[in-house]
Image 1 (cartoon, rainbow, N blue to C red):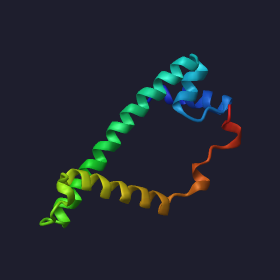
Image 2 (image 1 turned 135 degrees about the vertical axis):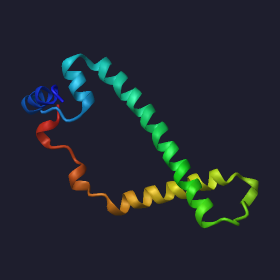
Image 3 (image 1 turned 90 degrees about the vertical axis):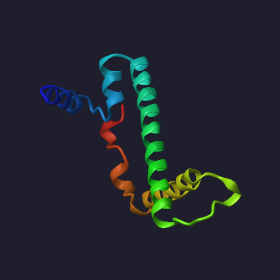
Image 4 (image 1 turned 60 degrees about the vertical axis):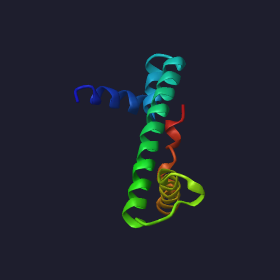
Length: 107
């Protein structure tokens, strides 16, 4: 909480857009790369867990007596169902103009 104004001042002055950009500015490229890898792995694990839980819950709640095709586990179909839902909702409700970085933030 006390550090946010200092980071915001650096952001405003140098046009930093994301956390790895700040670390690249403050330290070096290698530190930013390590943070990107660690964050990517953790987000992948979190997202995988969400897909598995959401899809499995959907299958159990909505399709209770569903016979699994090809003898595969319900979790497999849950992941497919949840993944399809995630992708379709992302495509339907994404606002591409807001996702682009401002031009002055490009380093």
